[in-house]
Length: 583
Image 1 (spheres, helix red, strand yellow):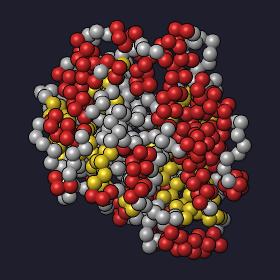
Image 2: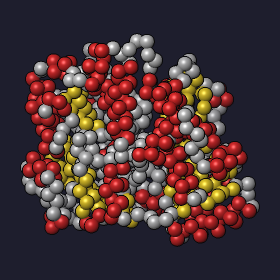
Image 3: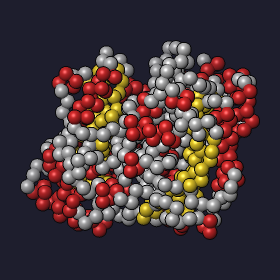
Image 4: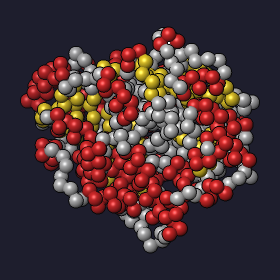
């Protein structure tokens, strides 16, 4: 026990013990304390938020863009695999190693020390460095009356800006579409393994890589050196695109070629150093309507009317099924309470503490696994019910729940429509107070983490989670899923929640103990294929989904030597894209 405590909170001698020339070079670049090699200390970076675990030679934390460039250079020169990692909140293992069958050592480069955000154009745009989070960006823009593309993180609270851009993440805000930009600074290795820095940020920063990155490190981005026509900072066509409810294709999905551009959708196939994004005017005094129904067809009628007939698009339209409501209410309660109490700013610190507790308790044989989850779950039970009374009443009455957020000047139009619709149907709604609206949306966002908590605290009955991220066709009226009975009985509970107006659904299946998850996932995906759905909708293909040939070709173009994040999309992990196995 004493040894475990020393290892956890003190200087780790195992990290000091690695004196290989390559590791010494990394330490010379960033400082010894920022290079981790002890497996117990690298574990939080090698294990995905929901999925993925593998070996890594080292985890490196650069303190500047110049340091990051030098680390990437050293890795490519030494023939190491580079995994660029931000907040590690993805659900498909897209920024962590997967297994131990790589043909080269892996170095994980964490950008979370590089948290700078530069506001340009009076707040109309921002330049973000690798560690900037959505919460940080939201707080930076709030005094300017502006908002970022996405807020809070719909599946993983605490997400980084780079994660959204790299993975085409869509977020909850209907008008803005997937995170997208044509303006970035990135490094690529060519087929010969030579590293090149490309400055497509639209800002004159110098010539050589270290001059360019050093200027950005120092925040030297004078407006006189900014090209305001360098490219798009968001998908400005999405608001029109999503309104086409009769189209036979999804509104947004990860492999959409229209939204793949250099860093946007790169899935870690290059080293990103900076991205430039548009911001948006903040909505003042929005209204939230909480809608309940037992008829999924009626909810689809509401969706189609809103998208085709409203004078402007709503801000958000978030769906949650009753079963997901229940799981989130019990197993996402601590997340809800913590965010209500302290906001999302300190969540990374709390997650780090949680990881430390787990690392310590995993070394003590008589303690059960997932100790931090067990403690947090026990903590949450000390508090009374945390959701508004009217939400509980709707939970008892209705199977399907939709939270509709609209601007202040759209509220009257939305209310008039809902009054008329409910008068002739079984659907009902209530207009939320500001506190009810905030609680409703936070409850919805806590749903994804709740599935993980359920798995952690029911390990005797749960095999694992099959988590799917699905883009339904825009014209698909049969959006509510009914599984075959032989598949359904292998599951304990099904959690459905998502961005309903965009027809993007997150579907988490908690699998009953003793049932293999890969065959279940394969059956699920086959059913989705028959429906014309695309997956993943807004997350990295990671090591769960097979990338289609067109996306594999895109990956090869970005990374011809297969040096960055190999294996993503179930592609080969071998250097230069060779398919043969290694003895």
